[in-house]
Length: 74
Image (tube, rainbow, N blue to C red; front, top):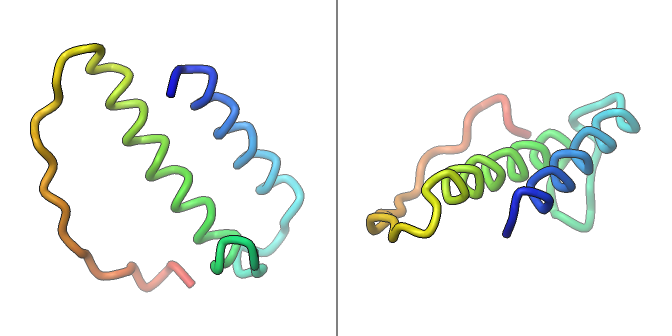
């Protein structure tokens, strides 16, 4: 993953938002609605941006935990 990949992903999200008026519109390929897809991509971009900023240094271990889905996410 490099900066160009992050920029292309962001452009894809902007394109989706430009074409879809309703965040609740289904996106069957993702098993979610448009708002859920945007939420997913933004979360991924935040992770990758952090990783790019960190550079080649080894990142500390991540502790993954389940969090409740916000009520505003379909």
